[in-house]
Length: 555
Image (tube, rainbow, N blue to C red; front, top):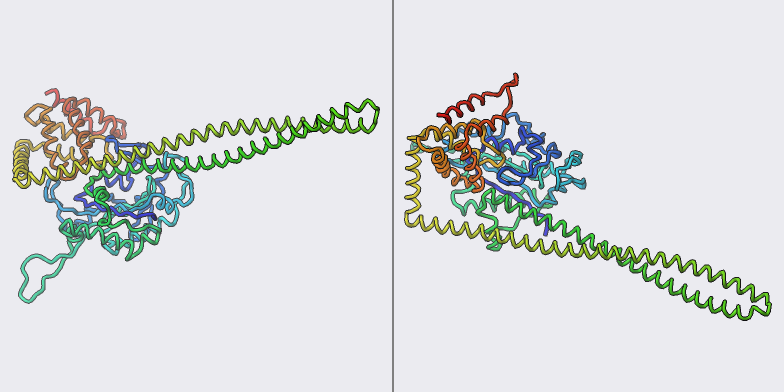
């Protein structure tokens, strides 16, 4: 089976600054690259020494990354304004999808070959040696052909970001596209006139308005990429298997996954890939050991046969010498001459026997050591196979558990929806939230800060300003600090649910909110230490905010 290509598309209602900066590597220090995981345990695979290999395509030209002075999230907003799109409030339930976020890649080894050729690259560690790696032309040609395909399909003016990342485990493309479709104008039309069309931001206008239409659109998109323009096949990347041709288990693996679930699944696959690679290396080592072992066995047999022949010769010479010594008393000079010659031959053979014995002992010892190494390698392979089976079982168990949980939630929601219980619960929550916001307007900024922090995969902590919003809401809540923190989290729950925020991230931000609720002044002071200083060396404006929070706590 050949290398497969992959195109993953995720609709977005907005792009925040942290995700935008991560995509473009904007203002990212070596410390940021050197992290192995974020505060929520999500692995990082960014390599500081390969960051200069990244590039982007701007208006059909290959440029170094960060060629845009304006950040990606601001460029998205600028294009939306050009199209006359009016932004929705952040808390709006009916905010539409305004951006299509693509990740385009393929089989890891093929993409690495396109990007780095036959150069050595250390993917297991962030190695300074990787700074000498050069970018190959083939990855640029693949990216450019992919860009042309997207420009023709969506319009070049609607491609807002096109970044190619070569500093991670697998080379890939990140592309952000504004979905623009032609729709009929609204309003009255005079008799005899036709209703004109207008270009407008419309995700549904591109992919369709039903799940079935979306599925067909994605299927056709993959076919178009491979068959119509043949970008995939041109670079040795086959089209992925049609969704309908997959087994039910494989179909379940390809859908209903949030971003954190995809990350977790990808990590499991990476572990299995590493295991497979190590297994292949051990098999190759074992094959070489077997070859060496066979050669040594041949040497042992050869030396043993030589020693046997030499011993036979020695025995015959000793018999001849004994016979000659019995007749030497006759004073026959010919006998003396033969006896001397035989003794020289015996000395020569004795020396050869001693040499061959030493060689045989050396080869036998080497064979013994090699046998131990071979047995250990054989045991390592056996352990590797056992480990691979266990990893496979754990992966399948994780997938089954995830699918079971999803199915249970679906059934429960379906039952609640049929009885009206779900709608009543939503109405109750909406009414409760509306009452809370009317009584407690300071909560809105706090909830926005909580959601912004929890929805980012790269931010480790509240900023001082965000922490201050949370503190301000807590002290004006009219209830206990712990109760206020819990209510803030409950108000943010709707945003978490709508955006399928990973439960682990929600739990993480809840702990940070509780820290602020229990020990605000010390918490903000800790945040202050990470902030830049003014030119004169004094603390920045955050000092005033910290003092304000401390006074509130004393009150």
